[in-house]
Length: 251
Image 1 (cartoon, rainbow, N blue to C red):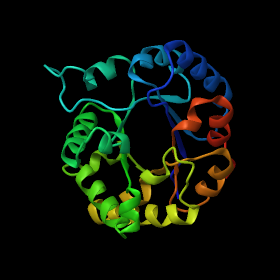
Image 2 (cartoon, one colour):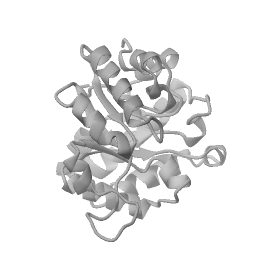
Image 3 (tube, helix red, strand yellow):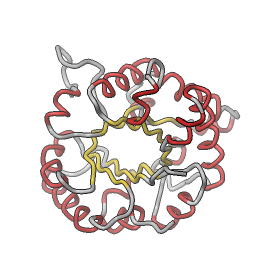
Image 4 (cartoon, rainbow, N blue to C red):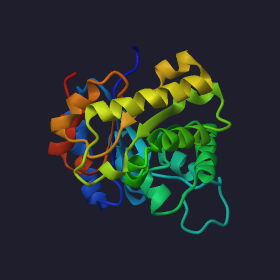
């Protein structure tokens, strides 16, 4: 397997610019000898601040969302052109909070995915089921739909810039975590979906992260699974002493 581990921190709606700068600077120092691929995604207001700190380091700069249009009369939105101007390399799209709190559907998310890829961004496409969907036995149905519809119209030549993040919604910020075995089943299934869409070779190269209450004490067990290639970390990414042990887990 030639896939590399990819650990991303989603800071969500936390931190002033000063707090973001302090955290980013500490991570640059702590992760400079890290063996994996890393990313931090600050809130929009802190992106420029963090960009100056991580530029030229082994930490990629991410954004947590983007508009579905390049520019225009879209009050309150942030465009791919503006994100590129700030040095953003990766955009997280389809996060469960965008899907369920802000009612973004598969069609809108797909539009954003294609726009971001068109402008050369790496995309982390988030998928995952609600607790009631899991209890109804619909995990595979939901994950397949979100993957297929999220990637609709995406050319195989762009797949190198696509990462999938499986995040069971019931495990985000709840302290509940899918067991490594539970997560592995879904990751393996999603890889089969990619294989059906783009072929076995593309599927074998696809990085599929796990997101959902990842902590220092479960990171290594999750990463030990054959089809889990990293983590999209929420709450634990906001402090150096909780994120660094995840980022530097030993496989």
